[in-house]
Amino acid sequence: MPSSAATDDLAKRLAALPSERWPRHIAIIMDGNGRWAQRQGMPRVEGHNRGGGVVRAITRECARLGHIEQLTLYCLSSENWKRPAEELAFLMQLLKSYLVDERPIMMEDNVRVGMIGRREGIPDDALEELDRTVALSAENTGLRLNLAINYGGRGEIADAVRSIAGEVAAGGLQPDQIDEGMIARNLYTAGAADPDLLIRTAGEMRISNFLLWQISYAEIWVTDRCWPDFDEGALHEAIIDYASRERRFGGLSSVSS
Ligand code: IPE
Ligand code: IPE
Ligand code: MG
View 1: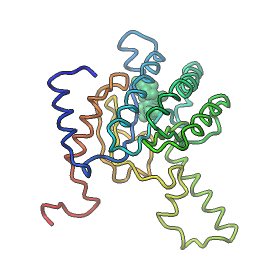
View 2 (view 1 turned 120 degrees about the vertical axis):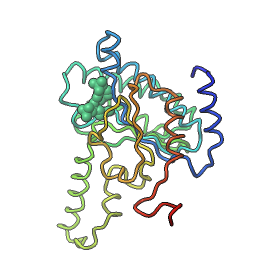
View 3 (view 1 turned 180 degrees about the vertical axis):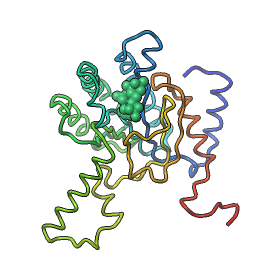
């Protein structure tokens, strides 16, 4: 990260944040790869390529910072299959090489990797590399990195409802036993804490079917920067902004109460 007065100031403010002001779980909608590339006169896929390097840098920084327990990255949505075949083939190739190349770094950084999304539709060779990375890193105790691949929030909720309905049909469950906790336990994210901070790059003010259930009380931070231009300084900015927010969860402000 280039050092300047501004980045030094951010780093100082970050170091001064009390532990309870840190987001424990950060989720990121990594958007704007195509626009970034087109603005440089490059093909869209070059933006994905550059974006891969940013994934590495941001994962390493989250692991280094220490207070962050989970990082969830939106890599491919269930709607992204609408894109041209060549772009999808490139993304699958990139995913595969990312999973292979990052393995030693993830081990060094004590990162545990997991996947959320539907496996059906992801090519077998990419799934094999994914399974290898997940197995290899399973005993790591540091940052948990959740890769959302072929992920859609509505599809996830539909899968959970189908599974719960199956238990009801089999006679093992009464409808009045269904509560929020049971739904959460049937999502791909079962057992994991919800995101505290949701970051979206490239300026769009929308959720694009990401973690619909889990972000009900996440703090949202949007930057105009495209993902290939996102860096550690921007991450620090988002965390500092998060730390200044008052999360009320439907209650009253601590000042008025
Ligand atoms: C995000 O960048 C990466 C994926 C969705 C896979 P985009 O490819 O959506 O880039 P823009 O939004 O078209 O600029
Ligand atoms: C969201 O970005 C999906 C990922 C970042 C993987 P999109 O580019 O697909 O979102 P829309 O189409 O602009 O809503
Ligand atoms: Mg996009």
